[in-house]
Image (cartoon, rainbow, N blue to C red; front, top):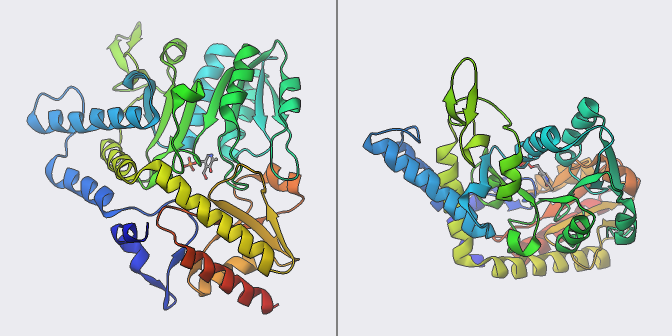
Length: 402
Ligand code: PLP
């Protein structure tokens, strides 16, 4: 994968006179030239607002925007582009579902199941809904390796359970949850299943029909695409029954002061001018990773993850690794003795190595692990074994300083 590094100009830069080693990919990935160039070209050559425009540029921009929707459909194997809603990112997609599904499908006393390892963006929207509607939230426990307890999960269902909303891959532990099996259990109990794919879609092939999930959400910026664009996939029949999320232009069929009717899917959920340059950039990113091959990316990142875990556990005295599930990818979270993760991150930064420290927007998971924060290295297709070695060697050096 080494030669793909040349596609990412930022990887050639230095930080504090040292070559940049970028290991903060779970937060956001770097962008290949083709994504930036596609967006620049659109601004320079094809910029016009989309939909309804009769002029050349508007029609061309609309073609690119709707072409991007088809690229997303193909990438996650949805049945129809009607099932692909563009949002600002995973967070907005989750808020859309909590708000609209919550409005249309949930009453006081209805239950939504989450897991211990959710990102705040898959917790707080449901808590806001709980405040508005009096729904009940239940949480799937996990063991010390970071594996969800499926027996406990099965036992959470009652005749009031309406939805399970769970991450496919934990942004802290890297655990790959068995979401296809979990969706089957939810469906057997008469509940819907949402997959937070923010940390899975960028790392291995995800097929919504194979998973048979009802919703899937992800962010463009974590899969080499631009910031500010994301996706909500929803089964057409379900989206069709859900009320609009926001009102405005684009999402209406006809407006009078007495009554408004709504556009067909997916436009019903896309009020206002969409980020049509962002969707074009996202399509370029999806084309880019598809040309490399998601299976190849997965195998490479798996190798980096195993190599990193092995070296850390053998060579760093006092290390505690978080997340040792058998099915795991691309994320290695750790603490060393009583050293503050922020100190580790700051000192590694001076050596050119970018990792993330803190609670990783998963404070309930931090509480489960009995810590305030962790350090986290996370990998992307352009990282190398040499970079992992540089990171582990630097960590040894930093730890010796204390
Ligand atoms: N869900 C998971 C599992 C994540 O890792 C993240 C971001 O780190 C999010 C949701 C939120 O994504 P965004 O900030 O792009 O909306």
